[in-house]
Image (tube, rainbow, N blue to C red; front, side, top):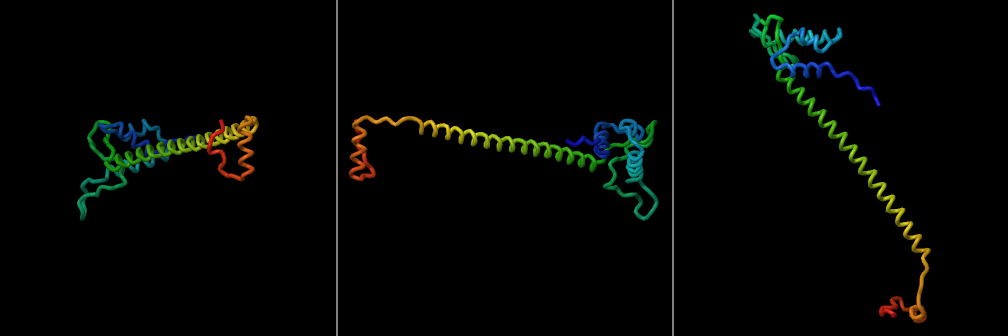
Length: 172
């Protein structure tokens, strides 16, 4: 079986953000998730995008439009320890989709496991049925056939007269 891989950075960011309903700082995020250098670069891009998204700027449009690529939303820039962020709505719903997919994956694996068990159960019950049938058939073949004299005479009469349905009346 393959070694479980480290959880995806995006999922770790979403889970951290969901557990911080009052927001979090850039430093808290990096400290809590113990990010390596390339992960810090990715997070810095998300933070930069959150800091620049939706704020007024001089120009023809007057603001930087909201981006679908940001997973953080700036909620406060005047906090003593720096800017505070929360998860964006898109990020939250992406995480819900992820959880639904994980649940569907588990359900699918469970259904496959149950189907395999059912197939093995059918196989073994069929095999047992065949073995029992052969045992009963061999036991019946080995058991002696006993007929009294009256039954024997009735069979001889049927054979002499070539009657296919002989013995409609029972011989007592």
